[in-house]
Amino acid sequence: MNRRVQAASVHVLTAIGAVLALLSLRAAYQADWQMMFVWLGIALIVDAIDGPLARLFDVKAVLPRFSGERLDLIVDYLTYVAIPAFVLTETALLPEWSRLPAAIAILLSGLFHFSDVDSKTEEGYFVGFPAIWNIVLLYLFVLGLPPYGALAVVVGLVLLTFVPVPCVHPFRVVRLRILSGLVALAWAVAAAVAVANPFPSTLWIKIALLATAAYFTSVGLGRALRGVMPQQAMDQVRHLELLARGISSTTTQIPHPCHSSNS
Image 1: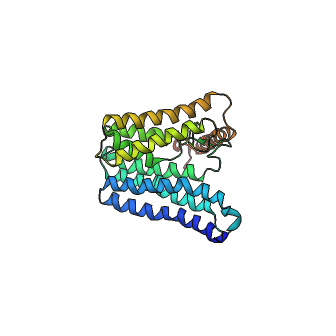
Image 2: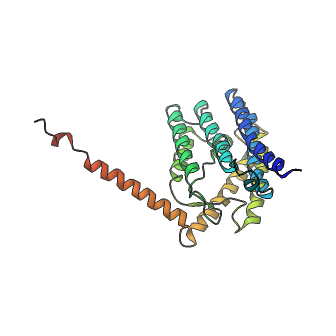
Image 3: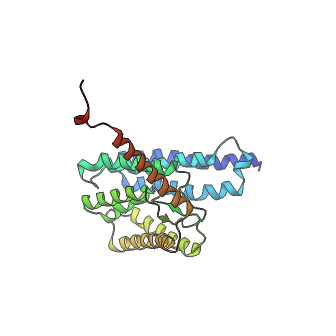
């Protein structure tokens, strides 16, 4: 097969994620949550395989005009962030008053993550919560938390987007890659069983999904505790500190109404 055709096929595969996003949105609008997660699950699989295929066929060199990375970010924002944010405005998972503000916070924090050029370390870890709101949404459906409990989860994860803690990628981080891959496979099986059955899920599915989440969280925390923070994380801390100083400086320069003169 012609190399350009192979490279273009990888781009088409990535672009199909946008179609899957539309199909999941239609299912969400119809309150067909199982079907919505089916489409999001297929999009997750596409996202997992298009990167290795792009490297295999050297897509960047063969078709330099078209950015697969940019295309991937656009599609991922739809499936990982925008669709889950919409769903949270349409369900009773959160307290009614908080649904739209929570969705807005998810959209904006997701943009922060996707636009951050230092969102990944050289080791393959994400820096901060990696905006995997499609996964979070599944957990909220599976666990059936009280609305305020679910809101606490959402608020906490939004804040963690800006905290430079390492979050493991199950396939890109070399350390424990085989074990992480097996845990990811176990997660996929449990998630598929959850989607195939009514929500909230049975106890064993909840335990399986919580155990896998605990594993990936512990690997990230373990990386943070092993020594010096990754350089990208330190840079993010400095950026946040500079932003805070800038806001503080601007605030102190604004004259207080009581100190202004009418003369």
